[in-house]
Amino acid sequence: MLIAGNWKMYKTPSETEAFCAQFEPPAGVDVVICPPFTSLREAVAGGVTVYAQNVHWEDEGAFTGEVSAPMLLELGVSGAIVGHSERRQHFGETDETVAKRAAHALGAGLGVIACVGESEEERESGVTADVLRRQVAVLEPHDRLVIAYEPVWAIGTGKIATHDQVQEAHALIKSLVDVPVLYGGSCKPDNVEPVFAERDVDGALVGGASLQVESFTAICEAAARIRS
Image (tube, rainbow, N blue to C red; front, top):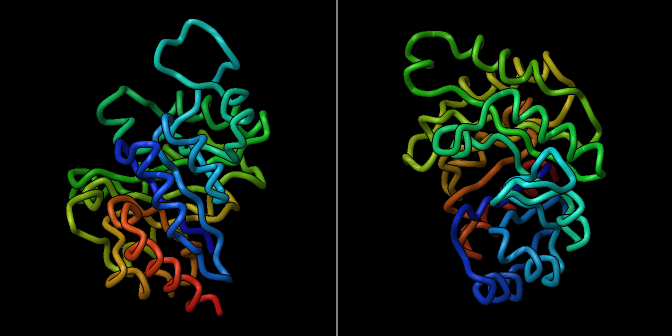
């Protein structure tokens, strides 16, 4: 089981050092930290597996504000998130650019957590399955690819999908591409254990609850208990 902490635009390098000094992942679970670009070096030095929050589809070029796979690899970064809903919502990410980022990163030797998920309007309109099929269709199977199912309406809202909704979405994704599937959406220590018990859930992409050592450790421990 994989637990990834997406820190978004939080934590300075010194705060990252302090977190890593206190954090001890439990046995029996794989843990990834995804800090901002400015804290990648400190996170790597802290001894945890580190993914970036984004990666470009070219090795270099006139792409202001982007970061390439060779840059990440030289820092000791192991992978990257691509296609997070906040990238899609605020920065114009599309299925096509997600596919390009994922393919290039995997080809360069990075792991990839590719995010998919429906909006609240799409869920209420009954087109969740169509949205997931479209988003997953652009991703090629790979032994370093992981997909994170993030219902957009559950990210940072305190809402969490029901167990049946999670299982149904994960089963659909796995029927389309044979890779591990994480759940992401307001994951907290007090709500994740039943989600982890679902057959097709292989871990979690954790947002706000990954910023505190205590809450992130508790989620990792819940995952370890389910798989023990």
